[in-house]
Length: 156
Image (tube, rainbow, N blue to C red; front, side, top):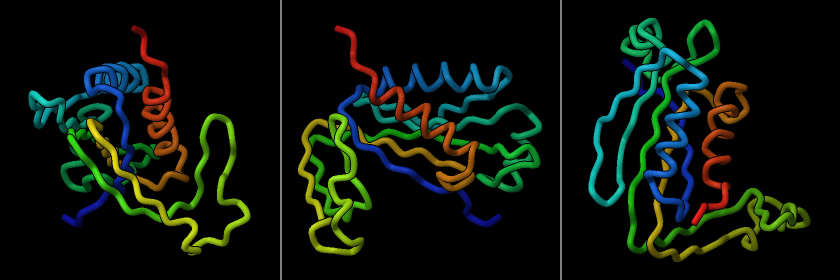
């Protein structure tokens, strides 16, 4: 079997129990007969969960892993890793904050001005594994679910 799936990474200070509960609820609403696999859950909040729509998709995924099925859906996974300190060097395709659109719109792609260094403390690194690119409607739907959970204001 070939390795398949596309990984998307998000860094957030949103606690894993909030993210996981919200994500599980949304996936069950999307797939009422879904099968959820808890592969690993640690005391620091780290986890790895796998999701398939039903037994048909489970069988398909055993042979094809994270490929899209004939209905345009496929197996997904959500993982979380806790970091006391995380340093990332990145190149940004776009950036926005507090309602401001692309901070780099007048800066050509590949320009050194798009280089960013993030030094973060007490954060969670979420990995979403999807069967298609972010442009595919199914993958976009799953990405939107995670983004919505992460962007919700926490209730105190």
